[in-house]
Length: 462
Image (cartoon, rainbow, N blue to C red):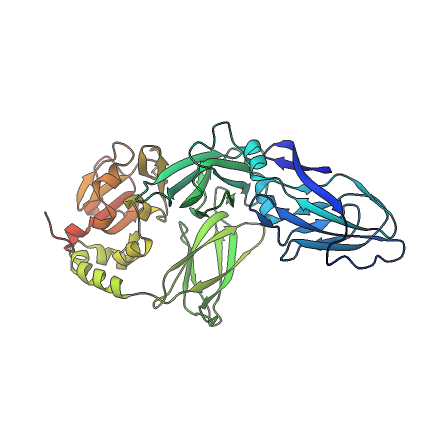
């Protein structure tokens, strides 16, 4: 019995994972070449309770290596005699900061040795990553890594915000859990329910990633990787191709990055190139009339272009047509339609709100460039990221149906208007584009304008 070593977070921890020696498997390695030896074995994923498929098994100090197949089996031949070890790597293990490295063993010429390897268990992971009492609220863990997008170095000290719902609990309230990345960029959020749906965001030094979807389906461990970009003008490039469900090219589709001003359209072959983008983890947005709008998480870096393939689904238009028909007159009456055509701000029309299915009103505002949605233990609030010189980032004027309102504390906006009554939104991140009817004397700030369905005539007023 030998031991394996796991590097978890910033500390090296010796763990009782097993490497077993025995008779050849039912499908043994080929007879070694004269004067050489061979290995055959399996790698079990003890964390998730299944074979570790697609793992790279190498013999350090040699060129010999093999990938595990669908049963977790590997075969390596033509190994020189002498003392050796094996190293197991896999993207799943990389996200956890793990490397499975065996103790040394000796091979003689002609040997055919069987090795059955097990990764560390969930209990080992929990002991190395979670504080005492960290499983009180649930037995599952979300583990991950935050890197700097332009250097791939660890992003130490990044704040992670996980917003989720417990899918085991009917009408579960939205919960917020936070974590922080360590010196190696690794983080752990412990005590989660084993069935949840939500999103996670990383932030550091005023920069943040997109909200990345997270889901656990009766799983003990979930993993994610995030990348923080750099401040200043972006130089990252996104390339890709857009197709329909049949695989045919979709030309004329609009491609953009949430929070970025850049936009492009696909060519006849469905391909596109979008440059001058901020680095980091972002949401790419692809839309075209006749198709459902699609968002896809992308990691952008100034070092090399990123590539993505996006498949569009056919649009489901019946419900949207009904809602738009109800609200068209009201939108035109309050000036929303005209201002959207001019295009001086960010606009969220009724059909886009319906596609997002927001649980809270602030959920619908996440993709507004220049607007920050802040999650806290007592509720959610919104802040401007671009105040004028001499003001804080929180300088933001908010209007609901022409009346100016204030956020006294977290949750105030969500308590003022519910998603069921949310009709349309417009946001002006630049103070010079704020329409005169929404200007506030003495507060030259970015402006958020919210329209209720009640105001727009789609709901009966009380």
